[in-house]
Structure formats: C-alpha cells, structure tokens
Image (cartoon, rainbow, N blue to C red; front, side):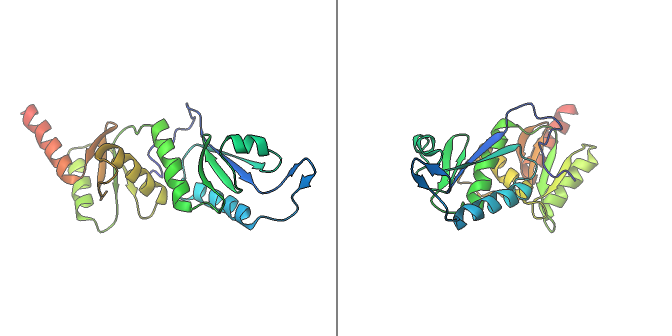
Length: 203
C-alpha cells in the first residue's frame, strides 16, 4: 500500500515553505528571556503533523526569532508570535497553530505542486462500494494503488483535497474516491459507468 499518491523519489519542484516566527531574540535594547509555551507547542504540532497527516509531502521549515526579525516579520504581516507563514502567507499567529489548519493548508499547496499520476483508489474498511470498486478494477486487470484513509491520515487529507478540487468545496467527500491515469473519476457509480462505456465502445 502506498502511503501517499504522489511521493517522487526526487522532487522536481520547490517544496512548500513554512516560516515560523517564535517569541524570542533581541531588537535594540529589548531582549526576550521569557520562554514561549505557545511557540514550543507550535513547533511540536508542526513536527508531528509532518510525520502523520502530512507524511509524504515536500515541506521545508524555518524558525526565526520574532524580535530579532521584527521589521521583516511586520512587513509580512506576522504581528504576533508565534506566527506561521506558508509560502509567505500568514496562516496562523498569536497562538499555537491548529493542527487541522496546518494540515489542510500544506496539503492544498502540495496537491497544487504535484498532480496525481496513475491509478488510485482511496477507501476504507467496511465500505461496500470500496470493495466493489476494487473488484471491478481487478476483474478488468487494471492495476492501482489503494490507500486506506482511516489507517493513513495523510491519505485522508490528500483524498479530500484532491476530490474537492474536482467537485467543489461544499460537496461532501465519501469513499471510495478514484483516479485513473491521473484523471478524476469519482466514486464507484462513476467508475462503473465509465468502464461500461469503455466496454460498449470496444464491442
């Protein structure tokens, strides 16, 4: 089972870049000596999220002391530490970053950078339509990579992000979600319709 649909051995594109301004450093006569619990928590959240929900994404993280880089931080809109920027845009500041906010923002950027390739089925256990979709592909000899979105948090975020790019942000995303030859198919019903059409045209 692949852990992530698009995880090239050598990345051909620039990574998503996270810049974190933490409470610390010095500016003129002012110096910070007080530890920042929110900053430490933000760092821990980033590290664990990259290992779990964002496993397989291409991300670089840089930390800077907010007071030392005060003019730069202010110009970028980072007015309160801890501040987290993704590719120069503030996604959180003034409190520990929300894990879901981080995962969603980075995944959207990653998906934009790395379009899905090949055949993929995103599903879960005890999903009848997932079982039917895999059986149909197996019957037709179509090789695919299967991703369990419950066992693999990264696959869940990837599935939701990629699917919503095709069906819209307000449409609920269910399993399975299927791509063939890098193109979005949809769920089992759409897969069956597509394969029936292919069979009819070949007859």
